[in-house]
Image 1: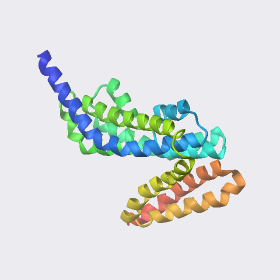
Image 2 (image 1 turned 135 degrees about the vertical axis):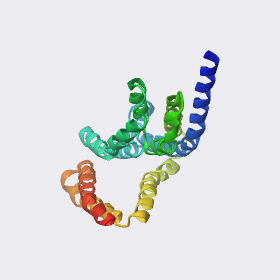
Image 3 (image 1 turned 45 degrees about the vertical axis):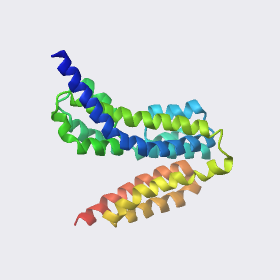
Length: 237
């Protein structure tokens, strides 16, 4: 019976790793770019790797590193990343409902490992929750993605001291490319989302010279999000 249990757990770990590999492959170049940019922003190797260990949020880390490079205050960075990551509350509630039969000792660490990508894959494999020891599947999925992001960040930080300055500075486009890559599919699906982007951009552009770049980003995010309440409602109609 113990052998059968081990085999079941191994199969869940194997399947979770297979499901996590595509995410890991996608994370590595982005994490690498983040590590290089964070290093060029003045962060130490320990700081940029620590951010990946404890924050583990790609868009927020790019934004945070950029804001550190601009010299904004810690309060501005904290508020901006908090607002940007509010969506994780919704994803966590949805995922917790998916795994509601699991014990709390599994729910908490699994929810911590959620990102946009792991949430999407976990949602696709929602029937995995019915398998015995399915929590090993989700745990391996989360851990595979997490380790690839942390290791990619570490490698990027190391390369930040090695690669030529011209090349590392050119990687600054990765920040904008990532946000555009996230934005374009949404605009294609819901054209009015472009209005939200424009509102956020204008608010940031107008207020940043007055209240500072950090608070300008926060204001643009909040006001753009509020505009989306009305814009997306119209889109559904």
